[in-house]
Every structure is written in structure tokens, then in C-alpha cells.
Length: 222
Image (cartoon, rainbow, N blue to C red; front, side, top):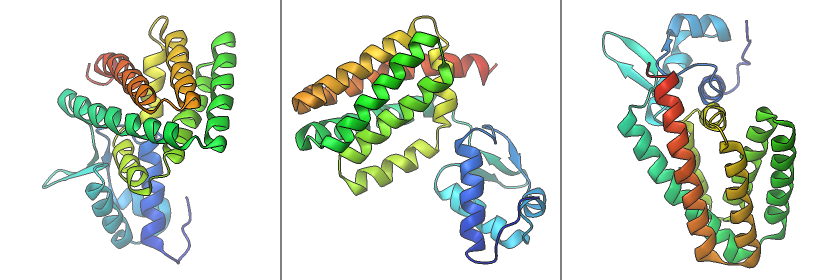
């Protein structure tokens, strides 16, 4: 049993359930029982109920009358919409970072790309996914736009993204191609080419989405 302390119980339960959804522990479509969650966290049903309401507002769960609460499972149309918005937002972030030329975030991107190169060399998908997260995090932080970061994180929470990246890079030659795309974004950011960085990032997200959707439709909607 996972024990939650008495302070900010609802917030802690919300964060714990959110983390389980985002990491893929609770898969899309999984039914979430208030009673089971209450027992799991060692709390009453009230904070669990409030937590689920908050997660519904964030788009992570669906509360269906006479059915219960389920982890949000996007349709093909919804996935396309989510990745279209992701493309725009991350493209904007890359462009803003190129304008700023923030040394710290650029260094973080370089380190992430070096890790990706190692991952491709030894065919380590887990290492690549870790490096991919670090790369995209650096771009978002480097944009230095708190509103963009806030909205992007809400969007990303609706996609168990790391799990989808695994599906994407299992496609033949995708690992190597993704590395090249990340290198292109890094080069353009380092050059301070705002428009080029934005376009390259948008192209990368678009390419990733195509492979992700193939894997998702194959494994989640069979």
C-alpha cells in the first residue's frame, strides 16, 4: 500500500495518479476504481474523487455516467489533433530558443544528441527515449516562455509520449532518421536561425507523429 501524508492529500493523490497515467502504468482505456485507488493510497474516497475531477479537466481521464472513470484513450482523429498542436508549439519553442541563444539549454541539447548517438550505436532504445526527453525538455525550457511551457505540459499529459516513442523507433531505420532530425534542429538553433529551427522542429514532430500513429493503431487499436 502506498501511504499518502495528511498534508495536501488531494494534490498528492492527483500527482500520483497523473504520474501513473503519463508513464503508461495506467494504459489508455483502463478503468479507475475510486475504491481501489482509495485503498491503494490509504485515503478516503473524497480526495480520490477530487483528484479524478482535476485529471478530467486536464484531459487525462474521462468520467462517464453509469460507467465510471477511464484513462483517456484518444481516437485517431484526436491523436492527429494533439500532434498537430504539439508540432506548432514545439516549433515555436525551437524558434524562440534560437533567438535567445541560451548557452545552458544548447549545451543540454548537445549532451542529449551525444546520448542519442550512443543509443543508436548500441541499439539501446531506452537510452534513446531518455535522451529524446532531455532534448525536447531543453528546447521548451530554452524558449523561456512560461505560458507556452504550461500549455505544452497539459497537452503532453494527454499522450503517454515516451511509450509512443518506443513504438515509433521500432519502425525500421526510424532511430537513425530521428537522430538526424534532432541534429538538424540543434545545428539551426546554434546558428541562431529562428525560422529554420522552427521549421526543422515542426518537420521532426510531423515525421514522428506519422510513425507513432502507425504503431498506436497497430498495438492499441487492434
